[in-house]
Amino acid sequence: MNFLTGKIKTLYFRYLAAAFGSALVTSIYSIVDMAMVGQYHGPEGTAALAVVAPIWNIIYSLGLLMGIGGSVLFSTIRGKGEDQTGRSNEYFTVSIIGSAILAVIAWLVIVFFDRPLLQFFGAEGGTLTLAREYVLPIKFVIPCFLFTQTLAAYLRNDKNPALATAGVLAGGIFNVFGDYFFVFTCDMGAFGAGLATAIGTVISIIVMLSHFFTKKNTLRLVRSTNLLRKFREISVTGFSTFFIDIAMGILTILFNRQIMAYLGTNALSIYGVIVNISTFVQCCAYSVGQASQPIISTNFGAGKGERIRQTLRYAIGTTTFFGIVWTLLCLLIPNQFIHLFMAPTEEILQIAPMIVRKYGLSFLLMPLNIFSTYYFQAVMKPRAAFVVSISRGLVISGILILLLPAVTGANSIWFAMPLTELFVAIYVVCMITRYTKQLSTERKEAHE
Image (cartoon, rainbow, N blue to C red; front, side, top):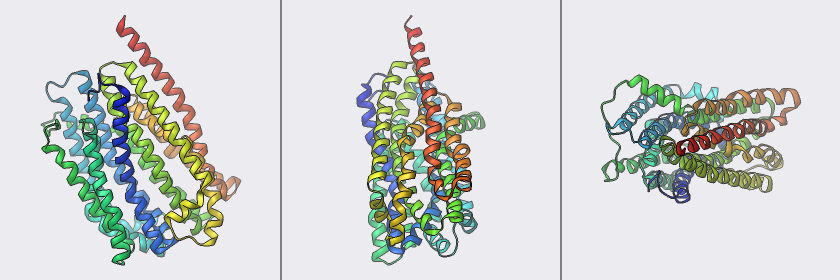
């Protein structure tokens, strides 16, 4: 399995299958939790886990910052054939150190400030009580969630995507059965869902660590020079992927607060379902990015532009497929999603189709926009990736979330994300076209 000489189609789909499984099972943690808690506690339980969602975004994004940022540089160095001194492993070492520091910071903040955090995210009354019950067991293993993201990225770049998937799969399977057992059989409710999730992530990290005892492992902790410079390089390279998840947290907070101000708890519980549908769509987009990134990074380092173009064609085809499928599902069966995640009231079933269908239009272009950040990072264009991330996650989306309900009525808030994805996609298409032409030019010059 050689990134520089192997058949692109085989490499891409092998990595896509592994990355999709890993991303899907990672998303199952929050999705199954919400389904179980929603069925046990009703709409208030669904609303409580919608409030908790930004905490997941913060934790996972920090792991992606170090994992994706470091592994892109790791693969690019190896693609250039400049790794005689183990320079790539210096970035791995700095990623692990950075992950440890960020994990401790996140751990302390969530352990000691969970109540004000959840209130800031939109929790109040019974929703706050259930949210804190859910978070309680998770507090003990917060670093594990962060390190699973970092390690999974490096395992894919160290040519062991199957183990990254197996690790997440093992924890996810436990979470599914553990949720049911703790929530319903043991009658623990929201606390039981949090407990199953906490144990599941410990299982995942143990499985992934087994990579370091295999013969194929080339990852080493080494003495690294210029730690701060390398940390900055990793952070700059990984920022856009990091900000995608942070942005989802920011958007969830904005939506939570605006929904409570204009539409009330029923609409918030429906938005909780949408957050989980969006998680599915994002996991599809992440899988395309994670499958493409090691191939593109290595070939970019080696100056093989045509192989990057081939990978890009498969990636765009896949994101188009995912976008169409998820948009059609939201348009055709909106209430089936509601039944999946909660025991709904009649009022919720009446208003949900309009909300899910409007917001669901954003899923048509979301996979392309998210994938683009991986592509721009892999070809060392962090500025373009930054523009996409900041526009989707804060600037355009934030303005629309705040402006639309105030100017054109409360229910227009559901059009904020479709419009955001449309504006961002125009920029993405222009930049991908521009950088792909540059790769083609570089390839031709190399042969002249």
